[in-house]
Amino acid sequence: MELTSKFYTTGEIAKILNCSRVTVFQWIHSGKISAIRTLGGHYRIPKESIEKLLPSIKTKTQDENQKKIKILIVDDEPNIVKSLVAFLQKVNPSFDVYGTTNSFDAGMLMITFKPDIAIIDIVLPGIDGFEIVEKIKSNPQTKHIKVIAITGYGTKENIEKIKKKGASMCMLKPFDYFEIAENIKKLAEIKE
Image 1 (cartoon, helix red, strand yellow):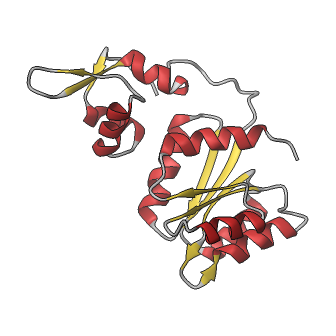
Image 2: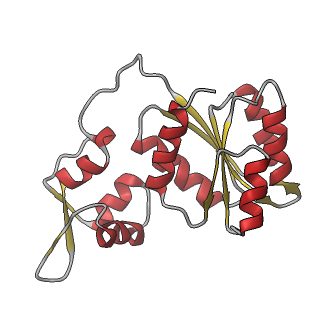
């Protein structure tokens, strides 16, 4: 992705990163990206602010020898899967991302796609997310997969239980997409 303008609107940034304008506003207000406010009250985001936040969207070519980090996303909410897949692919060219809302497809992709990291919603209809994580970590073919559990039910008990089952971490919905991208990079660096 090439950034060609000096300044971008919140809508343009949202389109580039496949996220909502509300998310861009949150990044501005939290200080993750800097912005200039126009006399009309609109924000303009300098190119440098985006490049600083996302070095991978600069006009650099990707090193072909760079190892791809394979990521599988499993969530019953199609919008989360679609937006997270698109965001991760844009934020880091070394991310090879698949997403599914179907538990059968998820099982097949664990074996055929062989992800390095799986992002799994622990509350899925008709299937126990805790059991999925336990099966991933107990199977010799999949135990190397690092699991990021995601949930809207982040009770202390659920977080402790999912970590005991083998998840590397648990993130609460709604989660920050940049934070999940950083956590993926951290987990990818950890060798078992």
